[in-house]
Image (cartoon, rainbow, N blue to C red):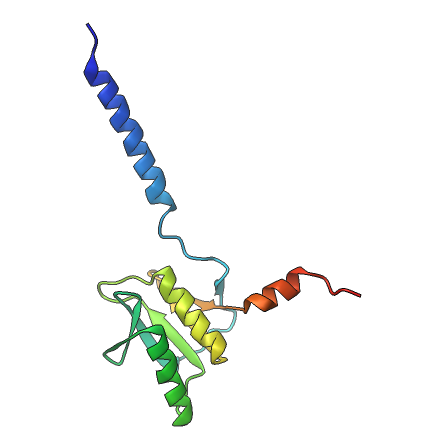
Length: 143
């Protein structure tokens, strides 16, 4: 007689191993955008909190990337400090890769410095560059 349970157990074990591999690969942060800051400011001009749906909580208001850009431009028009921005983990939401990319993009466009505070309390600077800058650096100048 055949043992059908042996094949099922082997199948479930393979499925479980695959699930562990996929889980280990997920949730990684783009390391090109995050660098260890050599000169972290003592205080930050604007503090944001990561919110659900890839939004930022700024003074109790949920903001999308476009709204955040507008709010920081408004601070500039009102001559309020906005040179350094820090994003922290929310109570129920962690900092996702989308938060990092959005904040790095806004900081690059508005010529600001952006930082993120990790779960363990370490602060890293977010650095972004335009795609044209990447292509220019990768290709040597033609003569």
